[in-house]
Image 1 (cartoon, rainbow, N blue to C red):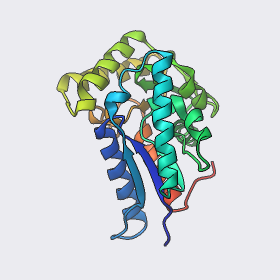
Image 2 (image 1 turned 30 degrees about the vertical axis):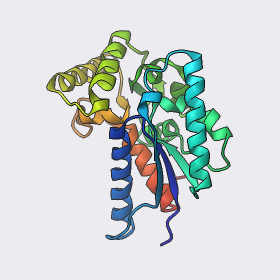
Image 3 (image 1 turned 90 degrees about the vertical axis):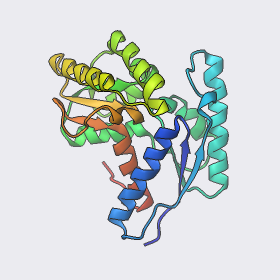
Image 4 (image 1 turned 90 degrees about the horizontal axis):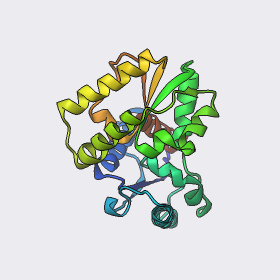
Length: 236
């Protein structure tokens, strides 16, 4: 079986890049052959240049960094790309415009997964910009998913857990308890599912055993990447 070559723009944290590489390869090995591995080109960026982006000028600089990375990966032979961070999909249109190969948008695949499973009302959990801005939310809504409004207290808690702890590889019981409380509250507010829209959050959330079904965006994105590598993409 000939496998297609995928480019990964990583480095939003080294933890995230490692998770993507590991998961995609495990899926490809399981589906293709015991000795198979995913043909991937990875550019792991310096997260110090992409951390705590607030101002428009900061995002413009980040757009340039990701766009140049995408061009290098395309030039090196990648036939499609993925961006290994939910938050950086804010720059998807800019990055996509600079290359001639497809970029697999994480929120589109999450939306498809929710729709296939019959869920209609989800709570979106991730970094501040993912939870509060439209670039991610509108992709889910386009698949017929209603989203609960973000709770700003949760936003502050999640930013602290993600940036101060998980992105430097720190996992605590306090963070696990906080995530369990947030998810339980979302169930009480009427959500029928949770979208875990930050790669590192599965370090403190039991995706397979929770009060609500948890749709881990990273797992879904990695499955989509493996589907593409193996030419087994789902149409719907």
